[in-house]
Length: 169
Image 1 (cartoon, helix red, strand yellow):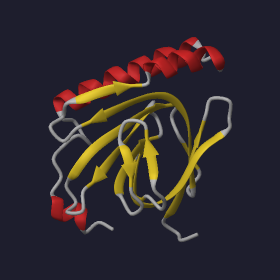
Image 2: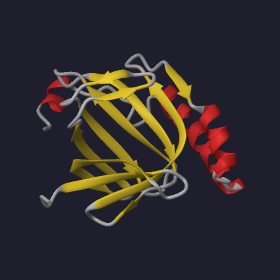
Image 3: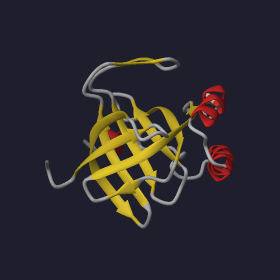
């Protein structure tokens, strides 16, 4: 593994691995970890459709927050969309970043319109996996915080120079 390579491991609430990929550590400041990544295989998403191999994104994780934000990039480096996950705060050991997915997702378009997804999946899985009251409250608070950030254009929901992102990796 390269020194700046990070493996991301996504778990379901029962600890079963759901997804795994690698990215490059671009920044670490306080609780914020920023990775640059590319899809290595084609992925079909139930809302986004086909995500082609080679698609690039910038991933924002906070070790003390119950969400993360993925900024999908176009070929010119401009923002295609944001994809946000509600999850337990990640754990990072310097090489592997692991988090438990709590099902709720938010898709944000470049014009900052957004759609909350999978609330039904969260409700179902909260019963299946016996989510604690604290987890349910934290997930709801995280969703509220994300929506406030989107509406007020707080970091990382800010315009990015296409040439900066295009040359990043």
